[in-house]
Length: 447
Image 1: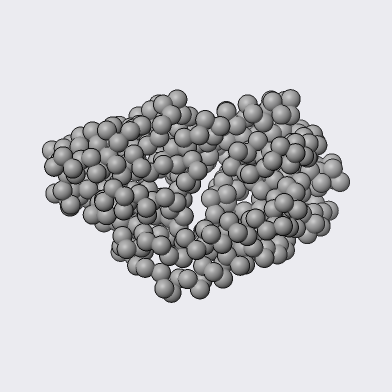
Image 2: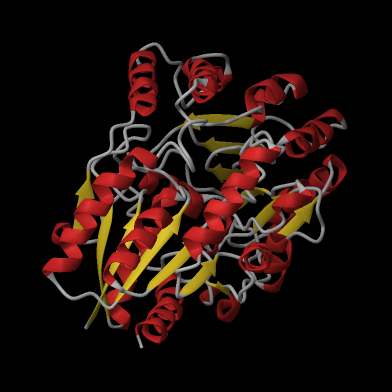
């Protein structure tokens, strides 16, 4: 079996979305003849350690990382948890620790030395320890390839240095853009500096991979080379036993409410839950929806504008906020819902975003409601091809869809919404298959 050293700043048990792709690839690469050793941080205190470990401990090597900003946020989160409102009630939507944490995060990121002096990102203090540990790994055993995934881009800097010092071929994986990332508030001078760093860093990569074609096209233009695409996906083996403690949203029953479920953060700059909530209000106002006929569940600690919008539209009877829950509970909640909700990214510059949560929804085998303004969105096309998606761009369309679903459910013999997903299309996004694509690329690079 060939060996790959996988450099990933984020990795379980840190419960952060960036850890999932690395975890799933590391889990399934051995099926295709590649044994991974993951080089990651010793602890990322900005997120709780609740993500399941899917790689044996001997295959995970951790380099120290001191994160004062994360430690400050973690202490604030811990001190505010005791006084937080019950996360399973709509009372939890009011101002609380989440608002304070958001303010504190914004303040911390504005401090000199936190991001401005750390190029390319605040993970850069990990660079030195990671290179030292990585060299010891590469000198102890023979490795056939290096693989790094970003963000943060520091992971690519570590892999580039290790490849340059040892001659081991290197594959650079982009979950998001680097210098072209519009979510980062970089001025024109800083962005040019980042572009030059990115060009020089990636000049030694044997191959570059992106999660979507639009992202790959942008990255390819910057580096003047072809970028291969291996998307995110879902894990068919991720089976959750629906115990009472693990399932907050009850399974639908005949005559019960139509249940919608959203899992994950809401990024207020790019995602807008207003059409969904306005559509619910529209149904209620015309007398077509009463309390008890619909319940929308939101899971996640970062809920952006949701609290204010729930109050604005007066839809508290139809919304339940659960706050942060372990991943197993979120997956279980997806599988007992009538339908799952995706808030697509509306910004044109983010057209390459294919939300990981939406791809994970495919495993739940439930209809998916996409709320977003762009009819040409990559996600809309994908879910349409898989025959699982309904796209709504306005409150009127949301109201019409929900009214139709409520009526369908009342006449359904199974008490569930009809599901017509195409298994052949859906299987393209399973992690075992995607890891096979990655293994083929690593094999080509190793040759």
